[in-house]
Length: 101
Image 1 (spheres, rainbow, N blue to C red):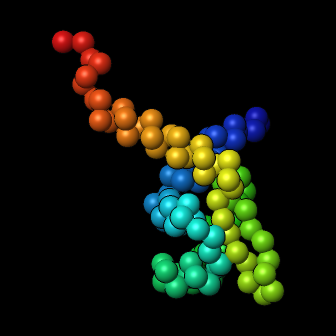
Image 2: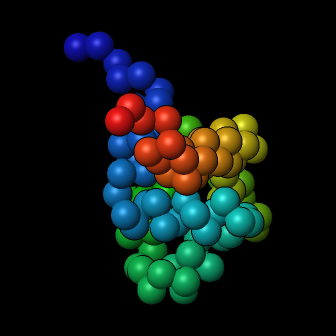
């Protein structure tokens, strides 16, 4: 069995609407697990499950601060995502402008 390409794992992780919402929050700023629990009204095991998938996909990093675990989007991922969103928004804006009659 061959390993999945990194990008495929990342897109699969973001394919879940819950993880996509969490990712969008983390794009704005670092959050600890308890803040994410409160923001989404999830249980601790649910947050842990989703954060494990995002972390294993290489999209976010975590750090311990006392007994708290804080998460943030990796800087290179954040920049790549901003670039991708910019290209996609331009594509949608120009939709049909480049198409043949």
